[in-house]
Length: 262
Image (cartoon, rainbow, N blue to C red; front, side, top):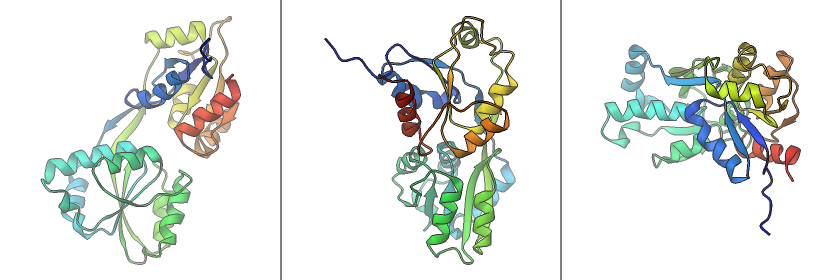
């Protein structure tokens, strides 16, 4: 008799943006779960021409470029490739990032990462960059989205770095009211719902009416990927039933298996 997979028979709701869902869904399906996709946020490219032009003209003058998400890498490099035909146009830029997914996106361009903290938080990245001792009067480019916190910029400026920010994408909530996935969630619920960002938590709360569970639907346990997401969950009064040990998808899945798994 074949061995039962750890999440066999469990329905897990995933709240990431549609284009980000496959990575997490794949991990869950491999463990036997049925995945319910609730794309509560949408991520799209948003870059203003003038700031982009300024950054690209000065690209060779930066000492560090900092990425906080794989989306930032993707949208920035799309523009870089559009404007330059040689990877050497990046000059002697040193690369820093948060998280394994972001790191993989950078390595996809055959670029080496010189600073990636063990803990995937903005605070840890800022501290590790400061610890390199390379920031005094250094020029640093931070690639952001519209909802990025300013903790990295603040800490780098305190270390006497000259910091420029370039927003390359925006995160906004979706409206799932008329979507079949929302109807399925309302009717059947799930064993657990996974939150990997504060913006997904906020969107879930804002769409409470569209996601209201039927009387006999399964009420899901709520899982958080890390401190920032947990803080938002607490603020909106959402219970946190399990949390990833470190802010990563693998750790979130491990926490889920520990909570639900066989």
